[in-house]
Amino acid sequence: MKFFNLSVAAVLQLAIAIGIVHAASAPDNSVPGLIISHIVPVGEYNMTYWVDAPGIGTVAARALDARACGTNDVSCSGSHLASTDICRQLINNLNTGTSIGNSPRSICLGQSNNQCCVSWSGAVGTMPESNLFNAANKIFATCWSPTNGSGLARNVILNNICVTECLSNRPNGCS
Ligand SMILES: *[C@@H]1O[C@H](CO)[C@@H](O)[C@H](O)[C@H]1NC(C)=O
Ligand SMILES: *[C@@H]1O[C@H](CO)[C@@H](O)[C@H](O)[C@H]1NC(C)=O
Image 1 (cartoon, rainbow, N blue to C red):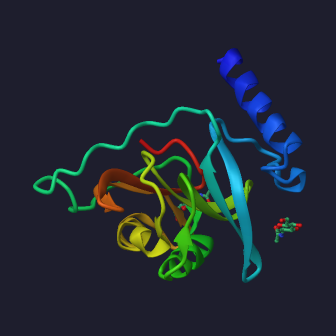
Image 2 (cartoon, rainbow, N blue to C red):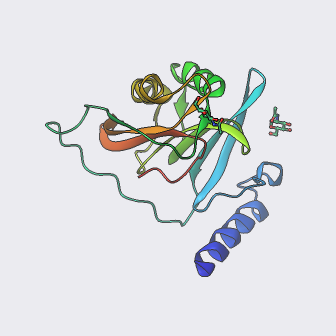
């Protein structure tokens, strides 16, 4: 674990040194294996796009099995709860044609102590943000109370690959 954390820090420092990552966008709460790609203001919040850190191995996404995938099977969770208000705004902003760049892994609205994140279990490459909408909306509709919620959907097709999609207060940990 120590070795892994050091590696992430070293990679991030190198990326900053050679100008891939602007130092100002280095997160206060670094997330193992992920770095920030870019930040876009949305309403009163920031939308943060997380991508795989360079050189960090990612879980290979399962090949699409058309017979078994696309059912968006929702399970709710009591941990990593995210605010109803912020999650609604995040989901509303997913239903656009915006294409998200290299190796995207999660999108968060808000900041680390109060955010809602959509994340997924493996790298799927570049895709329109709207690919995330249906499963996120189903998780939200199934799992959220008037104040908060957390959950995931299994057998979600993203960019023609079968993954698990999560909606919670963290940009990582979706499996
Ligand atoms: C949004 O992010 C920028 C840095 O990219 C920061 O300066 C600003 O304070 C953030 N705004 C909010 C509301 O978190
Ligand atoms: C989440 O919502 C539940 C049910 O509405 C509430 O009891 C709980 O206090 C909330 N927790 C947080 C962290 O907001």
